[in-house]
Length: 290
Image (cartoon, rainbow, N blue to C red; front, top):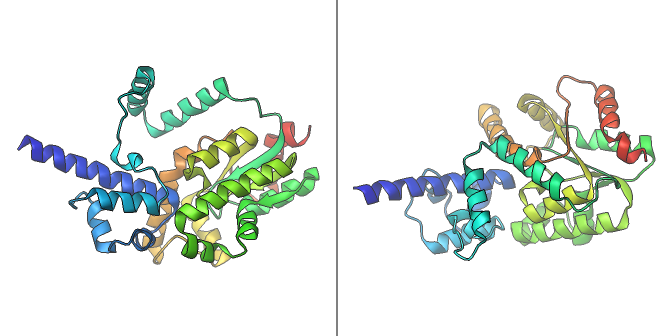
C-alpha cells in the first residue's frame, strides 16, 4: 500500500514537471504532443499524474522540449559536490520567489564583470510593450534596436512558424543561442528585445544576464491579453475567452520566477507609453547613458 502511494505521488510530481516545463517553453499541449509524437490524450493523462510512463516516453518529451531528461526525472548524481547537493536541498525548501532572489544574490556575488556594458535587454511575455518601448529607448540614446527573433529568422532564412515546424524546439533553441551570441559579439551597445520564452533556456538566458542589463517588462494578464489580441496573434494561447486567459496566466506563472532574475522590473500596466518610457529611461540611464 505504501509503495503504491509513493508511486502515485511520483507520477503526480512528474506530471507537474512536464506541465511546468511545457508552460515555460510556451508550448500548448497540442504542440508538445505533435513534437513528441504521442497522443494529446495521453499527454493530458500524464500531466494529471494518471499515466504509466516509460523511459522512452520521457525521452521523447525531453527531446521535444529540448531538455536534459534528468530535468524530468530529477536524477541526482552520486559524485556531485556534497555542498551542491545540500544547497539544492535548501533551495527546494524556498518558495519560487525566494529561489529567484537567492539566484540573483549569487549571481551578483560571483558575476563575471559585465554590468557596465552599454547593452540593455528587455525580457517578458508578448504584449508587455517590449517592442514599442525598446524602439523608442534605442532612438533616445542613439543605439541600435535588435529583436532576437528577427536575427533568428535572418540566420535560418525562414519565419518563426517554419523554423518550429521544420526544426522543432531543439533546432530553434540552438538558433536562438547562436543569434544572441552573434548579436552580443557584434554590438558594444544596443537595446535588445528577447523572445518571451528565451528565459526558459538556461544557457541562453545566462548569456543574456551576463552580457546585458536586463529589464523585465511586465503587465497584468488582462493587459497582456488585450494587447496581444490587438496584434492579432494568440500564439501559443489556444481557445477563446476564459480558456485563452487561463493559458496566458499559466505561462506567466511558470515563467514569473525566471523573468524575476532580471536586474530591474518595469510594470507598464495602467501607464501611457510616454510614462513607461520615462521610467525605463531612468532605469537604463546608468548603462546607455555612459
